[in-house]
Image (cartoon, rainbow, N blue to C red):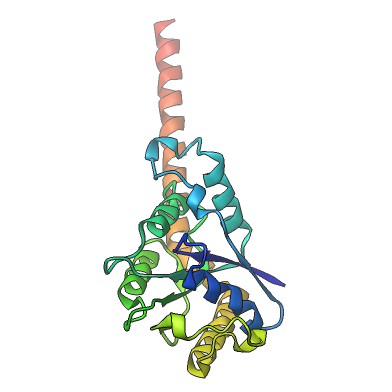
Length: 224
C-alpha cells in the first residue's frame, strides 16, 4: 500500500482543485491511498530564522510529507501565477536546504481553473519549481482542466464525478505513472547527486574539525 499526500493550492472551502483531488481516489490504482492535506492555511509566512525551531503547523506539514510515499499537487492560477499559499508551503517543505521533507519525492501535478487555460501558467511555474527542489515529476499528459466548474458533478457515481472522459483518462494515466515512480524510487534516484555532495561536505567538515582539534592539541602541548 502506497500513501500519497495531496496538496491543493487553494484555501477556498469550495475549491475546485480540492474537489478534483477528492475525486482521484476513485481513479487511483489498487494499493494507492490518497490523503488530502487540509492545513496549508495554518502555515505562517516563511521565515528562515524559524527553520531550526519551526512552528507546530510547519512540523505537521513536514511530517505529513515525510510519511508520504508520493505527492499530488493541484493548483489554481491567481493573476497568472502560482498561488502564494502554495509557494509558501513548498518553501517551508524544502528547507533546510538538502534536509527538507520535500526533495526526493515523486509527484504528480495538475491544475484546474474556471478560465479557458486551466491554470497552465501556474502549473508550468510549479513544474519549474519542483525541478529546482529535486522533486521527480511524473511525465505524460499535462492536465490543465479549463472551465472546471462545468466538469464536476457531485451527484454522479464516484468514478464519474469528473464528467469529462478525457480528463478522467489523463488523470488515471498520471496516477498509474505515479504508482510506478513510487515503486521504482524515482525520487531517490533524482536526489542521489545531492546526497553524494552532502556526504562529501560532511566528510570534509569532519576532516577540517579533526585537523583543528589536532592543531589546538599540539599548540597546547607546546605551551605546556
